[in-house]
Image (cartoon, rainbow, N blue to C red; front, side, top):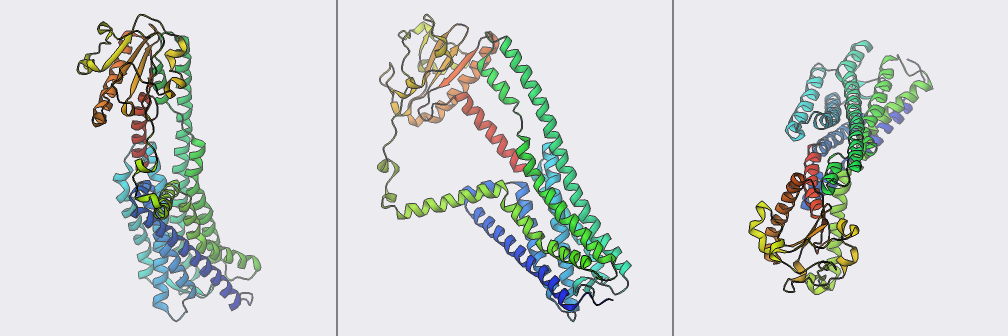
Length: 493
């Protein structure tokens, strides 16, 4: 043994390991504490309802334990043989458990996105399997006394009681090879998902271009609503942004785990730290092992689910603080600010008075025939009015021909057939107490209009004059359905 590796240099290396581990423990504890606060608030809790985030929480808890055990391993003296071996045992279990959990995140992403499995059904197997692997790998070396004092580094690690080769075999078999496999597995799973999304994007763009060219060649007979739905059904994925999110954990695992394996392997294979290069590699190894919890805590803090949940919780706390300071907080909303006035469609200039024989007949609309106001089949309308009523007609707030309708609760739909240039204005149930029934009627009407358009081969543009936002009811129902499907999908991931 040379005199290059002094006790002071060992203390410096152990101090680096202890300091970075303490910072990592504090970072993991902070993220776990904020996560618990977000979970206590019902509105912000919904943002954390994802399989991947729950696995991240388990992994952060494991990294917190890993950091605490690392601090103990770097500070325990040689005389504490029992505590020394137990601290390394806890450290290694936490290390393997968190590494396996991060691998299951990428595995779950591939199973859900590519193969269509339910991530929530596999969640318990991810956690139980990771715990089983960590226990199986670390019980044998702990039972045989391979965890204990390392005289070369002056801390608790794999012992040198038998030989350097024996230490190397146990370290490779129970730690290094499995850490490397999980890191490479994350890279492979993430690469499979990214390649699949890239191929999906190519297919979607090809299909969308074909639909666009076909619709443009048959524009006089195409259905505007059907065209919009077809284009929305094949939406390209913004894989560039998702690529960054997916690749963060694998890249971090490769950087931290693979580099730490290299440094630990180098320190185990050399006979002694006889040069400054060997000592620098030891310092890098201690820095990587201690900084590992810091890296994963930072990645968790940048997770979109955590950010959205934290913003929701913060907005709730700030709004409650403002309401406590506002003397008008005890007043109702109607007393604080006036209720916005409702508005309705201004009748078009070429509309004719309502006639009983101009009722638009649909099979399932027999029960709401009395709700139909008028149907102009005699007078053509201009092309710009058939596509969408002008914005000023929505904002004037003038009353319709039937003056007995409540302005604050009205909703209308204009159905325009391009082929015959007919305009149909349907005013549904106006009472606020029948709001749910009105939505159901509107949904049934739109469904029947779509069926009728397919049978007749005519197009229809749908314009909604709902007083709340004036949006297209077709888009409203479709967006709600797509949002529910998207939320259900992200819960699996």
